[in-house]
Image (cartoon, rainbow, N blue to C red; front, side, top):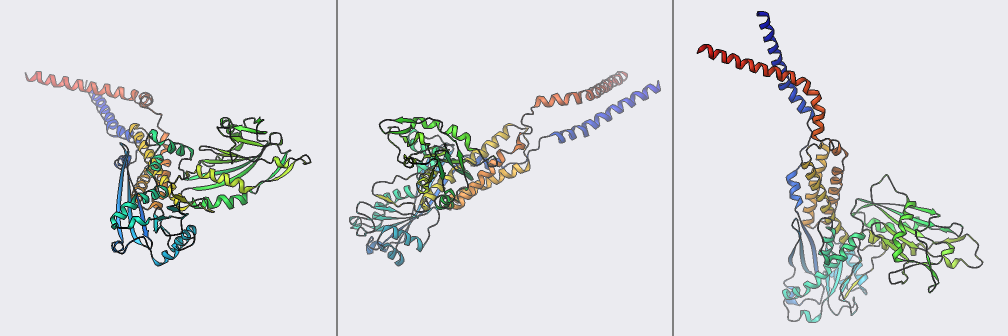
Length: 562
């Protein structure tokens, strides 16, 4: 009897010890070793960035030349004015444009520059005197008697960040300086719409975030034509020779790139990085058979059939698997002797002057005819030296469109200078940088907000320290980009926005986020129940038996007392 009682107590103590070890040590250890690691994220700051509040500040300088101000008006100069415009794109996106305009009179050296024979020479001389910072605009107000501008031109926009604005003689007679500035205001605003940015450009840059209205059809078309903002682009030039038996083609693509493309890409270096390659494809045919037009006595490709040209050719182009950057394809097609000459027809069945077309966010194709070499005494294959100046002129225009440099449509009375040898004016670069900065900020904000919502909804996704670091880096870069944009430092704002979009994409597409994404709770129970149930059942039964015996002893004691 005593031995049975000792064994019973020993079993109770063993069950209690095992339960204590399981509860005190086992369960916390299992919980700690199997919990999902989730590093801290700046959720409050991400939520603040989700409500995008952007302020774009532009420094404008209006310089009055000799003969544009009366002595009384000159006494009140220099003068600074600030104008602000507010626009609400949607409930989560607000835009504010701030123009800080400084008015002053021209210096002696600037007066000498404005006395040059032509506006182009004056623009170059003013640029050598002082280089305007990125994103700023300088407007020189010249008298009506100035010979810099033709009679029908009131505003000249040069290759840099300067503009010449002619003032009428009747504008300053009997007017105070405030009245004169109020009269000049709309003209200066038109100059800023051309040289800096417009509300249409900014809303088009926000097209992935904000739904555009029906009145922005042109902006939608322009934004869909250009490639989305990216830290880098791959540019490929391809020469298509469908029949090497007809002609032997020679093209100096390396020299052409150095002369025509490289100056543009060097100027676009703040926007993105570029890499260029070229190739020659033999027996590469178009996906559409040209039709012979008896009226034109030529083979033609109609605009409706151009969409079917790209896919068969694209299969021959190859791809760069080592890079994730977008690829811009530029193809030069030389038709064979049986289909020469070959011309592209527009929607109204008129021949396209450039004999080329472009596909949005893909590239362009140009048809280069050499039928004048196919004479009756020609010896095949005909040796052809391609005129690279003609070809690169077309490809350069297409490249500008693909990268988002939209052709300007200035108001009446405006004269815009050619962009020069670089293929891009300074103010065109500024317009592109404004749009790219806003687009980068909006894209990075959307990406990091979506990631935060995803991680909040799915609790079993692991958040490693490197992901938290990338998220924090994105938030910091976005805050700096918004601050620099507000301060008018366009170059720094673009750089921070590029860093933000790179960090946000690295965080969003990190492969470690998918490790436990498809490991739901029911699978956890299916794994743990076969392991813990056989061990827990005896322990629970022993504890229940001990509790029952304890209650029975308590009842027996109360009965004895009674």
